[in-house]
Amino acid sequence: MLLFQIFPCPWFLISFLVPCYGSLQPGFSKLQRGYRLDRKLIQSFTEVSFLDCVIECLVTPRCKSVNYYKGANFCEINYENKTTAETRYMESAGWVYSEKEHWPKELAGACSNSTCEINQTCKHKRYSEDKFFECVLSDCGIPDQKGINLSSIKREDAIGLHRRIHASCADGYSQSGSGRLNCQSNGEWKYNIVCEGEYATMICEEVNYSCFSFE
Image 1 (cartoon, rainbow, N blue to C red):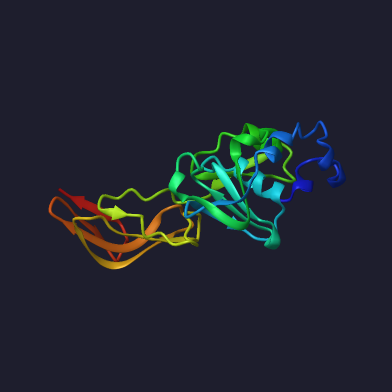
Image 2: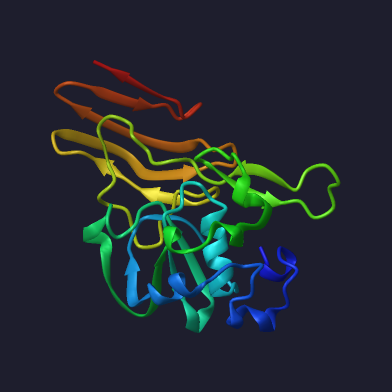
């Protein structure tokens, strides 16, 4: 989403904190340069500005923080922040870390008043006369099936649509299956992993990928 498509203010006025944005100074003053939050990704974006990255977070209810790499104009939006995922907050040269709550919600334009669900993101509608935004699926949520352990998530893993994460079975369970979870366009996880333990057996069937838990 491009900033100039959302606000009437010209690009050159951004640095002057013009009224239509409200003050951006609190957000810029709290930037954490040389840090990023690791392995808590919702989605990533290429070729976007830093403020566009912040906006992507503001219009996504699940988002709590962003990582931004200026050298590549690369944006990551996270479902945790450095307080809720303290052990995943780390030094990383070239990156900038920022939290959603440090930015005025007015940056989100019409989406600042949206009622999108936690697994949705707000999209501006350019040519609609009676509706200024719509809510669309953004992710598959955080897997919480019994027996699943997410500590094996890799650096590039994300819970957004068309992304995937790597999982394993928790201690006390034996594992079979790929361990990969793919987020489908309908907002549901698709995976094939069986975790067998003393108290439960989870079966994810190859045919319909639905999971059952037997106590």
